[in-house]
Amino acid sequence: MIVVKKPDELAAMRISAKKTATILHKVASKVAPGVTTKELDEYAAELARKEEGRCAFYGYHGFSGHICSSVNEEVVHGVPGRRVIRDGDIVSIDFGLVYGGFVGDTATTVAAGEIDPEWHRLLDATQRSLEAAISKAVEGNRLSDISHAVQVVAEGEGFSVVRDFVGHGIGREMHEDPQIPNYGPAGRGPILKAGMTFAIEPMINLGVHKTETLKDGWTVVTKDRLPSAHFEHTIAVGKQQAEILTIPELDT
Ligand code: MG
Image 1 (cartoon, rainbow, N blue to C red):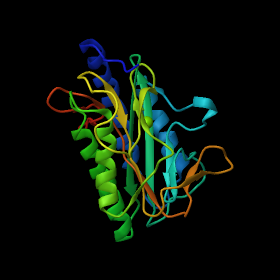
Image 2: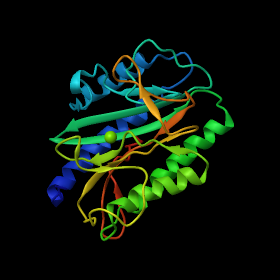
Image 3: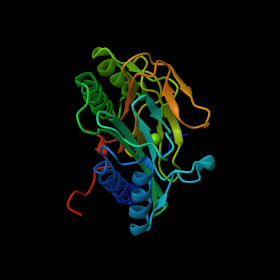
């Protein structure tokens, strides 16, 4: 069942999501050659403590990080650790925060130093595929209009869409109904209503769409070890247009 949030619930989600996005923005700005993913993780934990929020991923099915940090060929769920970020890497950071009883979930992929132009094109296309998807999160549309929009942009640029992981409803729980694939035909699935809240999160690969999970049980990598990008926003379906909830507070 897809929960339609009431105005007071949406108001609480705006606050939670803004804090989530602000923390992600600050952590992402620390990405640079020589920094370890563990250092990024500790910074996220410190910022969450200051905001009196709880890191949603920490302890989730035993996950040891406060963020997911996925470098280059790592798609999602990378475990922060001793890996040193190098010049030319791309780093996907995914962060979830629980505040006031609601979860915010957002991700971005950033470049460390100078990256390959083709990788830059991948980041740009992934971000644009998310924007296209969000533009479809409008009352009266069907759920798969969101999915289809991602696929059109990503494949239109010659990239491939990860099938094994999907976006999701979000609210009091990190994962609520529905699941939101990033591919498929338009015009299918439930009709969207204003007040539904989704975490839309395209994961786009430079090479093949297939993935595998490393022996740590968490880190998902591309089958061909070519890079992958991941962008995510928590949004609310609107009557005329979607509202992006995970917009950072940039002046704090
Ligand atoms: Mg998510």
